[in-house]
Image 1 (cartoon, one colour):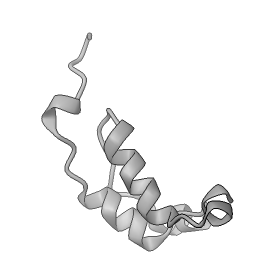
Image 2 (image 1 turned 90 degrees about the vertical axis):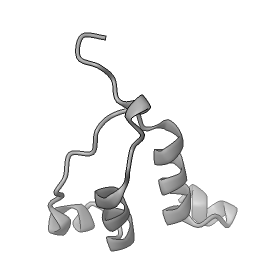
Image 3 (image 1 turned 120 degrees about the vertical axis):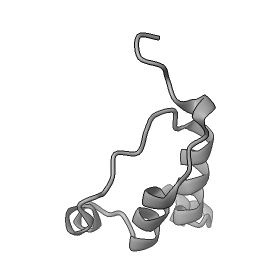
Image 4 (image 1 turned 90 degrees about the horizontal axis):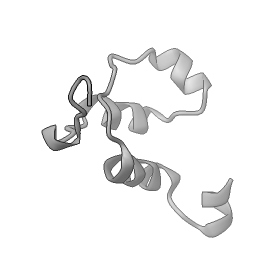
Length: 63
């Protein structure tokens, strides 16, 4: 809603925010059918499945 209201590309902004703030590990493969019903786009799901999170972002167990 806010992206539409502000004239922003929601897919692009979502991926930028994931790259900037995500500090976990992607838990794919994803259930595409269910996630599409939940509002994810095919582009977002594809990008998430192929995203490379730098090792420095991973939290070590116990930290």
